Length: 236
Ligand SMILES: C[S@@+](CC[C@H](N)C(=O)[O-])C[C@H]1O[C@@H](n2cnc3c(N)ncnc32)[C@H](O)[C@@H]1O
Image (cartoon, rainbow, N blue to C red; front, side):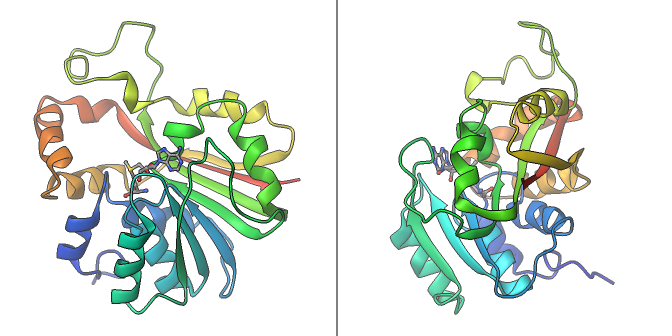
């Protein structure tokens, strides 16, 4: 019997709204490592079409600030309202590299699924985000990456023809070294996520043209070098 929220969710809706490996499944695993309680206020940064936000609101009864750059808040508002979530999930247009329009010490948690690699792969993003967390608040990230470090220019043959620098794929060690430089957090978890293969398999079933164009890469065997990296830090 399926007990996972994601397994029991409307699959057609998920396939239509995915923007990468199934973010609802990844968020569900990530959330299993977080002390989420009803009524918490969570920033979902880089939420895309918001399936991570929907999981958090529906499964955990929290209030979500669903912030994204590429997907308009108007489109997300319609989606959240259609699910009866307009009083639980609030859409915002936010570019994390610019001014972040929220109050300091406002969020219990910041989560980010399959998006932090685009704006957080540098030493400045963690110190920029931490002021928005309450004391002892958590930052919880899931990013696709590589399961090992490859020397410059020496990607495996299965990956090389498909790879572009925009992927921003790194290893667990790379992310750990970056996060250990930040004195304002203690890392409480940094691991490869169990849902990687299933989340990727589900993404390849999506009609999204980017998903369809990932199929040859996965058929070539690139997936054996992929992981999804979970990082959780607590604000000191
Ligand atoms: C691959 S999509 C994933 C979306 C969603 N989290 C999911 O997994 O379905 C990457 C997301 O990162 C967001 N993103 C990229 N750069 C960003 C930035 N500077 N500020 C906020 N969001 C950003 C994009 O808007 C996009 O929705």
